[in-house]
Length: 258
Image (tube, rainbow, N blue to C red; front, side):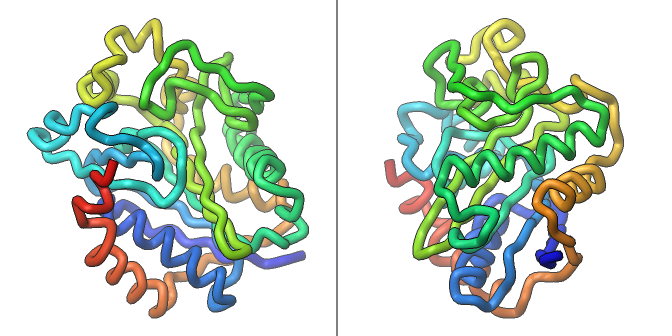
């Protein structure tokens, strides 16, 4: 059975969270680090936007500024996510791994089955979407469901996005625990009536739970056929992350470049 590395960094600020994920990806690419699953949270409400998103046109950045909500551009694609009460995950691995060697969509499918097992370990009746579902145009990740994303009663509960480069991929995803609808609607002005228009459903809504990490760890281990070994970030990854924060993720030139 193959051993993967598992890292739980807890809540960190938005810039460091993105920098650590990219640093891990670089370390996996260079062979310094093995395939890695990371869980983390956010030290304050934060907004991450997809690599290709046009920030000023789609997000109420003035509200973010006035509320002290940092805006950070992810290395992965997809739409904007308001991070507050959630478990965020990232997975980095070589694309030629037997698990992930069949391309982008198959990688999404494999990872989704691991996450699905995690939800079902919690007693949540979730399923994997086979098609794209979008009720209206919106910059928010949880306003639409892409193929192989996970839903409960037709509503999205986990949103994910991926970056692939030089034989390695990074997938980042948000597992909703609870959703601040008032803040959500302030950041995404188009979401005027979230109770009717939102497709998302949180774990808090689906099932009242206190701790979800062990269920997802077990689900991913069983689905991938791996053993997760808890480790810390390496000195290389920490140094790389600090450089990325300083030179990239804390810079307006990166976060507001579109």
